[in-house]
Image (cartoon, rainbow over all chains, first blue to last red):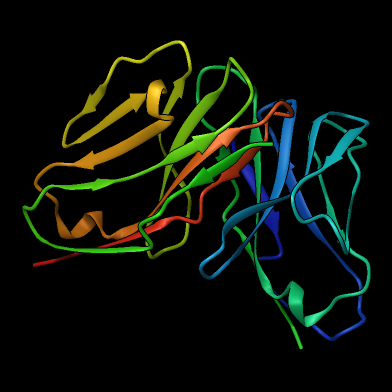
Length: 112
Length: 113
């Protein structure tokens, strides 16, 4: 099925560990973005990309890295996990045209 | 810089009541796009509507309607005759120049029977 696939769905990390949250879309969308959702804070933009090889920082980029080597994939890397990064992470893609964004189902990350 | 404000944190209504969710935005762009999303208890984000800054017509879709007013920088969302299934968190968002979204903090709507 076409859409945005996020893996894993759940993850528990220890403080200081690193990991990569995967995001892949098969709709040939140019625009992709990562958000974190915390209670009472809504969704906050971490990083975004307007095409392969181009990324930029959002509102809360510290502690996260991204790259966009292909149109399909936009992985989010946690360099050294901290408890403050416990959150639900959503990836989204868009073709920038008439309709809304397609969101993945989210990754629930807990850092202990 | 862009900003989206949803001043109502939580709203509780009884089924069949009408309810309006407020959204106020700030942007320096002359062309911009606003969105509403619904997040039911299951957690997925459901697209409801997109509105561009050129089109100030109100939109109606079934029990849902949207009132976009550039003069007050508002894009309010009304549910008519609310139902229990409308219980969710609703987010208003503004697209930035990089085609990513700046979200408000959301309004949690609880509809009780």
